[in-house]
Image (cartoon, rainbow, N blue to C red; front, side, top):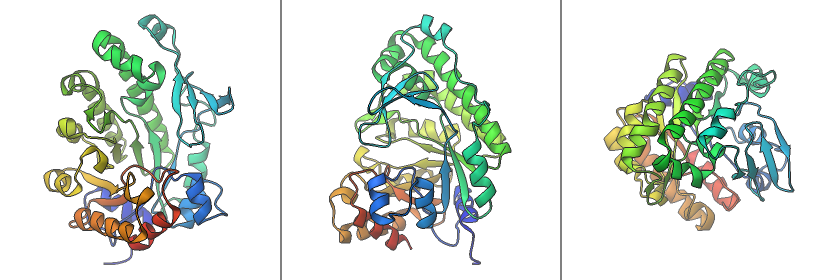
Length: 336
């Protein structure tokens, strides 16, 4: 087989075909890991290029203002507290009721400068690296706008408000998708997590009634724009995995072992319908294991996921700040 570019390799895998070798990239790599392995890399993009990841990942350029030592108010009106991490948790949200929603104005998805980072990355790397854009589907926007606890209460008490928030999310992200497709993005991924280790955060019935129609709509919209769609969700998704696959994403990620997900089983049951990205254990092995255990775990993931194609190697969530840099280096060496 002829050697592929990174872009060709990722897109081949997302078509559930077999590339020249298994591609690799990560949604998030903590700054301490990046600094330990590549001190000259100042950003995630710098690190991905230095480590020869197969995809470069960007976000729309959302504005934010600092409102505390570790807190930032987003353009959407919610406040995230980042602590010492790179992924924040919502601590203030603008919507507590239907009346709040009626007054709420979402940011303009097409505001000037919204896609400046994407445009720069496309200009420099299109055709060489696969270029992915982080959007949302049906859960993260409602969660941030209401807060997790209030949103889950609303699933039971105010389902029409939940439906309205889901529609807002889907409408906004389809508008964003249209713009990123026109600017040369190769694929999109959504990070909306709606499961924990014990299972989904709502009943399968509530998921089907309130969230699944929007997931189907956003997946169809991405497909109509020619954008393969990687659907991320941590945790135990077995109770709703059929609905997720039926919605039509191109790939499922990250097949979370801590949530009881098994890569070989998912591949056997759904590999003819959806590609898979995952699932080197980042809960136990990468933070606490040895280099030797990391090598064995990486080989296990490749052995289970790679046959027949349709597989992208990655961690089972992210390379977070507790991951040992030497273990991620060992994972990368084993992949190579």
